[in-house]
Amino acid sequence: MLLYNITLIAEDQVATACLQWLKNAHVPAIRTLPSFISHQLFQLVDSPNEGQTYCLQFLLRDKEAYHQEVESLSASLLQELQQQYPNQVFYFSSLMVHLD
Image (cartoon, rainbow, N blue to C red; front, side, top):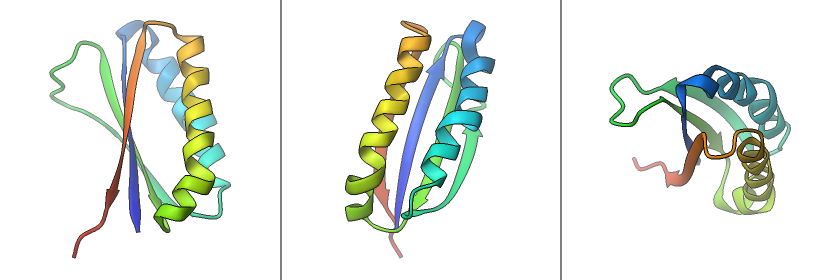
């Protein structure tokens, strides 16, 4: 299994709208993919950054499914977010494998 993490840092004035976008657009789109298992959404409590920091994590079946399904869809969704809030949102993603 893989954990796909998106960390999003939003300026305070757009943070609530970004959070709603994550919940109402990004998560539902990813949840439709066959490789999707589950997701969790977190907010950093002691972020060293200004604004609000959110971490959205998706548990996925395997790396092949990530490359076939999630990678391009997630990139296009996050690009949409950047267009809605130019220079007010920064994000990065990471892909992790579970170790026993």
